[in-house]
Amino acid sequence: MSISFKNYAFVRNKLLNREEIALLDVREEDPHAREHPLFAANLPLSRIEVDAYGKLPKKDTPIVTLDDGEGYAKLAAQRLLAMGFTDVSIFEGGVQGWKMAGGEVFKDVNVPSKAFGELVESKRHTPSLSAQEVKKLIDDQEDVVVVDVRRFDEYNTMSIPTGISVPGAELVLRLPELAPNPNTKVIVNCAGRTRSIIGTQSLINAGIPNEVNALRNGTIGWTLAGQELDKGQTRKFKAVSQATTSEAAERARSVADRAGVKRASLADVNKWKSQSERTTYFFDTRTPEEYEAGHLPGFRSVPGGQLVQETEMVAPVRGARIVLVDPSGGGVRANMPASWLAQMAWEVYVLDDIATDQLTERGAWKAPFPQLPTIPSVDAKTLSHWLRTDSNTLVVDFSTHANYVKGHIPGSWYALRSQLSEALLKLPTVDRYVLTSSPAELAIFVAQEFQQLTQAEVLILEGGNTAWSSAGLDLEKGATHLASPPLDRYKRPYEGTNIDPAAMQAYLDWEFGLVEQLGKDGTHHFWVL
Image 1 (cartoon, rainbow, N blue to C red):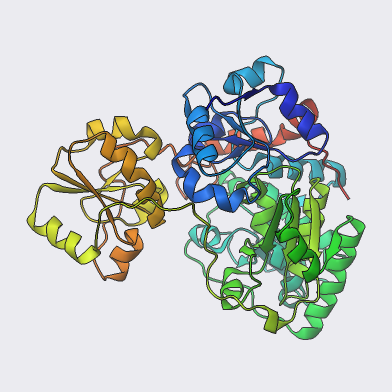
Image 2: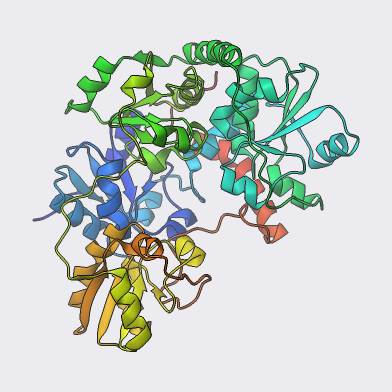
């Protein structure tokens, strides 16, 4: 089947007209972060079968695949068509074609959200304090509360001294009991700028009586000032009273109303689930723990702060409809993120009046997959025996590099599916390869390609790495045995505790330039309340 090509004018017109389009950069995350169009969502070819159905819920959404001449865009288009998507094209000329047509390209990841954050600060002059000023407040034991709005794992890695973990969408709900005295100064921090700007402005928009400031440039600014960060902290927000929840709910609803957020009912949701003419995303914005204890069928767990920060990672169809729900927090954690998504030009609804007995599903969200091919497999106990007694068995792990480093089957090798031919040249030659991954389904999709490139026996580990761990078998940590470069993860200049100061400063300089880039691009429709 011949696959059509689409050009810059086609994509740009879709964006300008606010029509649905999924412009998918199918390269790995690292090359994607080097340069890409503003609304090119990263959906790597390596993971297309395990990600596509969850991120592209409507089969006839206009999809345009993008690479930089590597041939991935064509392969991705073929796989998407084979999975039942009907309107799939390739972007003509790749990233270079976009640039030659006059299109603006952006660096880094989650760029729409970061650019929007910079626009918010430029329009609202969101107040901030320098690292030195915040340190003096802490050292002088002033009446100050520092709230860290990143994910808890990021906070746990490194944090501002005295800081408390309050991920973004929780702020308006939790802060009144963390700082009940209106004279308490509140400092909001993230790693860089975006989440602290959005968090600070959320509290201001909600009318919190305290003085609120962002920590200017986050933990990066703190480090560049030569100040020490804490590591391994576990301070978290606590449950709040019903009175606090009710007041926060009123504040958040007022902000959402001013931003033009629309309201939805369960009847609307049921209609939209079966609707063929629109893509609709259904997100539960509470904590993952609350979600797993009980949630509405068909809703995915996406905590609200990260949703605003990483929108295109879960909603790559620009122009789609987004429905948010927070059934146990008075709607605060849906209304506040919704207010920001509305300003980012999404059509966004909040689902109201959900009772506890309607939260009938339990457990983590399960991604929908296409039909799995039938591949010979081996269980964890048998594989463990083989590895102890048979030197001609080798395990190849197709998980993300980050997950591989955290823990993998001892002696296994890391490989990227998109680099499979090159990886096989580096792997030891054996009679039997066992493929594994997290999620387990990824290895199943890789196996057929792997078998075509080798005469050896190819099997998959039943249940993947999760089954190995569940069997109580040992894991090995570290970046050992890499058959592929770790292109699947762009090294963010604000992650970890050992970052070059020059890289941190370059990152800040890049963020400062995003508003100008937005102006050049002109397709975003962002506005600021």
